[in-house]
Length: 229
Image 1 (spheres, rainbow, N blue to C red):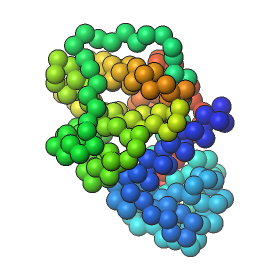
Image 2 (cartoon, helix red, strand yellow):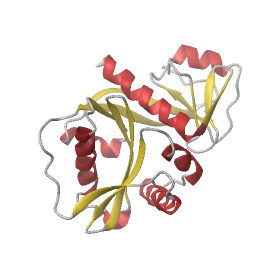
Image 3 (cartoon, helix red, strand yellow):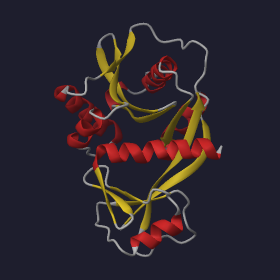
């Protein structure tokens, strides 16, 4: 389990670097959305020690993989996510008729803009397009839509590092919810991982998404908490 946990958070942290981040006094700082601040080890002691040489603003979130009994002074827990992984299955994925996974070209500015808009609506917070554009140009990063009879209904971002594929930004807007599209986009992601020869798929689930991922066979390996002023 510890091996898959490490694969999970290493994939996550590297994606944040793809979005745009700079190192300062032992910590990494997102230069814009998603506003994360972290130590590469995610260790609480190392992170808080490095934090003494840095300062957070009100938009930034400090990332800890193991929450202390009392939070960092002056900060409060904002949200927690569950680390999950799935050993890529060998069996054929049964996909709904008329569905496909549209993966964007790295220079498709209109497509990336539409991805940003659908994700923002689906998650209920404002994203920025520039970090997505930067990430799309990095090796292994793919932004995509689930299409149903040609209409874009859900999003997913895939990031492959060796035999690990991280799944991010799975979003369905309110107009398309209740139709099984979150499950369908994940089935397409699993098929893509099979085609790419992936050993394991990783993600970080919100409370809302836990049951979906459990039904698909993902296992829980830990949690991650974001702290802010």
